[in-house]
Image 1: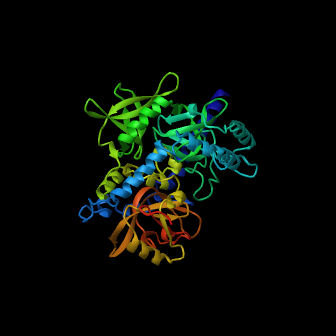
Image 2: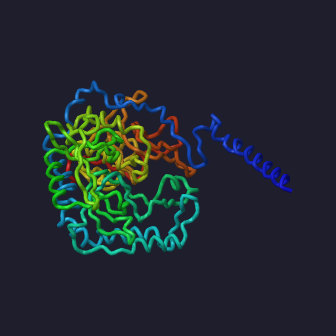
Image 3: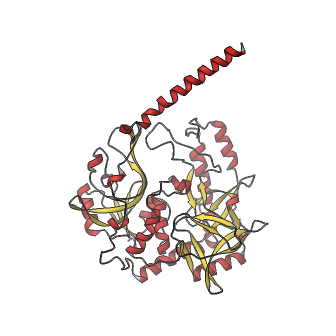
Length: 477
């Protein structure tokens, strides 16, 4: 009897093993290598050169000339300092008090996030493709049942110790929309709000009952972060840190740079745009790193500066320096809400601009409000492109369509005609029908065209209902 059972199991296993290669053959078929499933295929990136020198030519007359005046950059840098270390910083009591008392501030955001994901009439799916049921919603509602004080408390100030995800709910597990639909499901974890760099000032407005998650206010975001990724700061730490930062601030320019302190302790990995104070010790420049003591309070450690990783900000705003920083960022995968250490569209632009001392908010719409806006939505696609070619200003012009932001880097010859060139991090393009995506899934230089001859079924980004350009060097009004 045991022999018969064993033989039957063996037949079952053989049957299963025979089916596996057959089921995978569709994905190994060279003719279908760019087709993932009925809602996803790959965009032909190989047809678009990604050498930055192709789109930002070193032989251009203005390659080493600043694209911002000294006064413009100084004004931008002062705005950055204010958000991190000044009057709009999470370490500023008056600013935090205004956020706590604002009906749309911390309390409003906490309630809105909870309602958005736990209301009876909303549906999301877990990583196992199963609906997140009423018990999951009840658990999340219980976890977010915390109180946010109306008054600022100095002991609630903190700093991030590493890159950390900002979540809409206090959980690291995902919540996807319908995975059967194009542009939904993986990798679009709807609970992912954003990501904070190491060494960002925060204010801890609330914690879960088990203290594992903290609801924070940062220079750009509100949301839940893993409590082990932050340390509290006191007046002495803040005085030391801000004094160094205002005197000499460094910015990471080499994406995914690793930092180990002088004691040989690895502290964190940081991507482009991370801001760290610099200090001269015995005639050599050192990078200040946040660490924590046995009581959970932040202390300062130091690492030798490498100009290959960190340079003093603001960096001279030239095409040469822009190309240098982009070369470390381009080709990196798309990360929804900056998941997995990658950027989405607004994080790509924001992180690229920070080394130049330019502060931009998170998310595409607020970024489009960061300067003088020209709404070209009523123009035809060809008129929009012609306007951008004529009036676009390289590296200080943003192009906004609903839900997406791009950086204009200049004009170039493409197949015998002059076209505008953009740099952006994008998931993909969509055809008019049926609902699907042509996946790019990375940061990329692209000509902005009315139609792509190698993918003519796709809608152009330049033909979307909303099309707005923003000049970062000019104030709105």
